[in-house]
Image 1: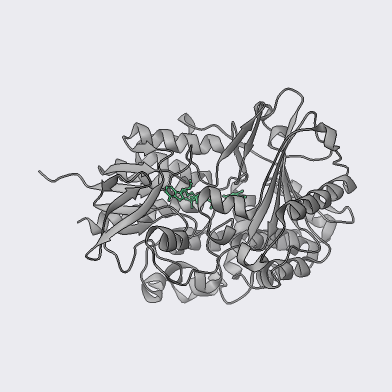
Image 2: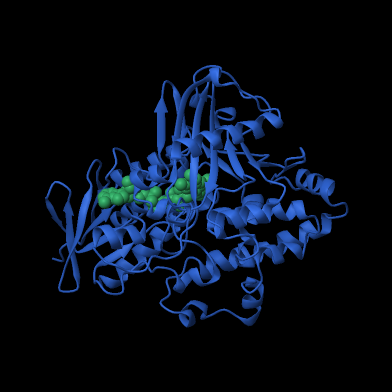
Length: 489
Ligand SMILES: Cc1cc2nc3c(=O)[nH]c(=O)nc-3n(C[C@H](O)[C@H](O)[C@H](O)COP(=O)(O)OP(=O)(O)OC[C@H]3O[C@@H](n4cnc5c(N)ncnc54)[C@H](O)[C@@H]3O)c2cc1C
């Protein structure tokens, strides 16, 4: 009889949990060791005095990714997680009060876009048709394929596919083909902030991000994003995965070029046929393998504010992005000059506006996310002073747009700096979203999901393939599982 294979997964982020479910569905024995008191990693939850906040992700795209995951085990996502569409989805606000609201309903979208660019209708349709083809190319052929080199990655692509991918053009250049209004381009290009680039240097292929949101909608699990983590954890447990929390891994043990298992912080050794790290790749190298390797370029950090307000916050719906006057200068401060931008771009989520169960009766949960440079770029910083200044600037800007609230109405407040994010989840250099996504940081250029030097050692999560975001790390779990299953034969 063939002995079942045993995998140990270090970290119970979304990538680790999804991989645990997939490996169990394929008959492997699986144990997840999570350092924190609960699973989810960055996608975590703060619960205080009746207020429930999602710590990190609040925008859920591509539910089909999770439907696929549950289907692998013969289950239905809808039996575990209730998803509601958020439409209209995101509102963008500029300092002069101009507003743009996105929607998956094409009539509403066209009306909004026309206000910024009269006559844009046919170009919106052309954008959607073109981005749809890119989206299919990315998800069917590029992002989800394990490839060890550029040639095997591109194998099977036709010259038309390559042309369509627009990887030699910038995201802004790609948007420029359809939209003359700088504000439409600023809004649709704002997704770049989370990928570690600007619209002027990320590849045009990323026009699939605004497209994906417009075409496939934006979703909120009932009970917040953490309900999705709970659903995937439940799936993994029901399939028989062991999930241990408060179980920090101190070291991945390697002997004779092979991963043998993990040593837990208490000293116990857990043997395994394969070890998978769901911890940021450079953190894994440095802290779990004692390897001194040059880390990949990482995405920026964030300062996040969690405010539980005694009453409702006027003027704000679920998702709002506040853009500055000079977007280029903000990206420059963030990505090149290593300083907190003079003009902030930030995101605010009021999830209680949509799901009343997230706050006590009459109250609101307000989450503000301010991108800032990574710790090594910021240098020594007085965080209490810096966060007080950011809080003041964010609230000033909210007030300017009619979303006023005074300090006396805040019942609960937490502030997480990049140092807090690093300490809690092992995020390398305080980077919020993992490794960056420039052209030469994708596919075979990205840190691979199979270690090239240590047999039986794999990776899953935001710093390996295909990239960051809750759906992407879940797709990445399928790719890591595919590698492991193939190697085991
Ligand atoms: C503020 C913020 C907002 C975001 N917004 C969105 C969004 O709106 N939509 C979206 O799709 N994505 C968003 N993201 C990105 C998304 O959260 C990540 O891409 C995704 O959750 C990463 O999952 P992961 O599998 O890499 O695991 P991680 O979340 O990195 O989890 C890794 C786990 O490993 C554990 N760990 C670390 N060291 C050890 C150790 N030594 N032993 C055991 N366990 C260990 C950690 O505690 C953690 O639980 C956001 C991220 C942040 C930070």
